[in-house]
Length: 238
Image (cartoon, rainbow, N blue to C red; front, top):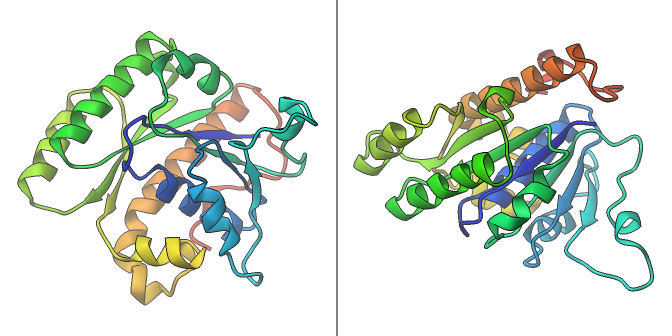
């Protein structure tokens, strides 16, 4: 099972938007994704509750809930036929928690918004992933997502300069568009909207999905884990 962690302790960076749209794109392509929400705000689970019955299913796990009646491992269990698992992490996550939350991650996606505050927070997040969680750059597990970017603005240029200095791959640039507001309100993803409505957004998502598939293929080549049921990028977009 491919485990995709969406992580940035800075609130408002777009973690839930990224996680839910990833889950929807995998579901629309014939996969059986699981979406785990570790954020007490429950935004991913709220999105899932709005998802129309006629859309391809996404299995939801309310990981922020605690129950004295069951073990934590039982509560966070993922059905065997689900793949991939996408984990939406909470804001204000302390760096001491990074090693545990990233230990089994195949991919760690860090969304970054184009503002000075967000750029500074992202720099600290990446430093903590490298120094505290001991993620090696050579593993190429960390991917940066430039989120809600408006082209040719001063702050977007500053974001590009910052990302270019990190030696961490920028795997996709996602536009600032009302389509993500519609996604949050309706429980569907960008890939499930009419093509005429989202055509400018699809290039960024294809970049991201292709990168994720490359990571999956590399892991499979190295003989790591069970990849039954996963498909190639020829199924993206659906």
